[in-house]
Image (tube, rainbow, N blue to C red):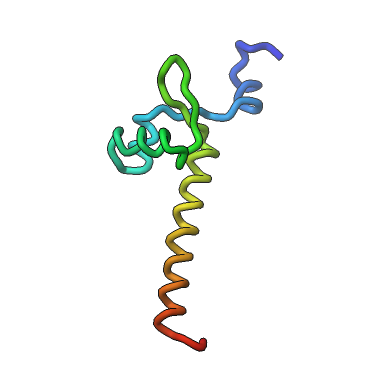
Length: 84
């Protein structure tokens, strides 16, 4: 594989997002993204002291948040409608 051929790299290497890209995508502040990365809510890693995360890690984070919200709604519905 020629490392200078971007088409081959795109098939092998996942797209990495920087903090500003994550912040824009999540529509939250840079500080909030750094806190989520720091506590492990978003799986990421540092390169030269700067955080990176894969698109897959972002998708996993969003999916977990949706599941938490949906689980909370189901619990509320069960509480509001006992016996159903």
